[in-house]
Length: 226
Image (cartoon, rainbow, N blue to C red; front, side, top):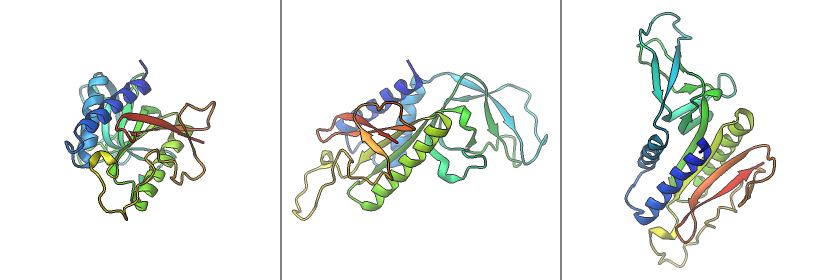
């Protein structure tokens, strides 16, 4: 099974568990940790790593081979070269075909920073647990999706956007008649020229899989592409 399908299966498991117990995990960091647990079971192997020291060459040496888990939280994919924090990802799955490159700064031999080369990353996941009813949150969703589209188009990294929508009727009924719902399928978002489709589009420039709970509370996904 491909890295893409294994990741999608883990996300579907997470969403279905959440649908059964919506208040079981309360914060976004908890959702990240929960998905990490699922992915670690799907990707149990370790990947070998080379450690570089760009700021303090030859300050440290490592006598044993270095290995790391394929699933990591809060990393930064450095695209373009010298990429900034906008290329961060809540969670990544590392490739295992060749050794990955880790960057160590000079404050200790374990001072490995978040920066990763694009070629070392197979999957990048952004996670949001927030109410889509809030315009500010929908803007953040669109920003995350655009960043993932850039990584897919330029680096071949599979992108997933996972939303636990706190405006979903799963959490409880609305009593105030002045409260207006958002469209659960998210088609009213401003995607900055991107498109949304149920089926994988033919030969898109870039595509990201957006995963969420449908109005009936089932795990579902659509494709955001350009």
